[in-house]
Figure: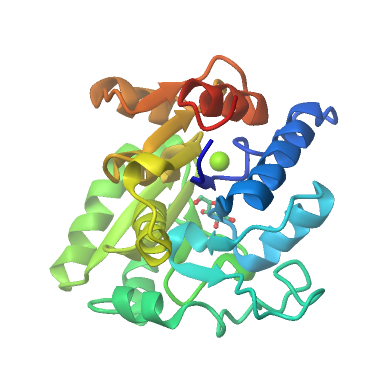
Length: 271
Ligand code: GLC
Ligand code: MG
């Protein structure tokens, strides 16, 4: 068994919100912690949540501490350096503070080109169908709304055209039939994964990403990394997967953490 880089989405991928039974999650946590200890594997969470909402979930579901945290759909990366004082970790809020001013600076610099938050806001203001998400989810490089699925097909192309007209280097990410994120074009979960992979020296074949919804497509589209789509994945991801088939991607039968375990065994990362 050799080391690997494990990247996972949280909501409805690692964490199942529909049950109190967390046996599969506990087993996965145990296997991953052990692998990290014995082989130096790395654990990365890649979520659409802000660090504020991440910490709530981490406490509630007793998540193990990751080696890096990718929040706000890939626009912020926090690396848990070994120099950090024990106890002052991501969960305590030191690494990922709500202002985001301690996130990886190289990454922030890389995605800042062509991004202008004020312009994005001034354009989105003109669309009544876009309902602002809570303040915690509005980030320096992420503007987020709720948009009803029934209106999305009509609104998204229009909005994109308006934003492009201003020469903005942006991308729209629509997930779960409700969440709309507007972020810099060169930032998403997949590009954040590649940034970490290169930083730590993992080849794509030793990297595996897991997800369930639209904002995870970037993880699976990144390249040769292994992909695990959990059994409860959303239609938008299943549809993308069937339109873009690839041998390095595995569609699990089991849901959430159970599906991740199944996929890790399929690829030979775990026995
Ligand atoms: C999380 C975030 C939200 C985002 C969604 C999809 O729910 O809190 O802001 O829109 O993920 O990326
Ligand atoms: Mg999810």
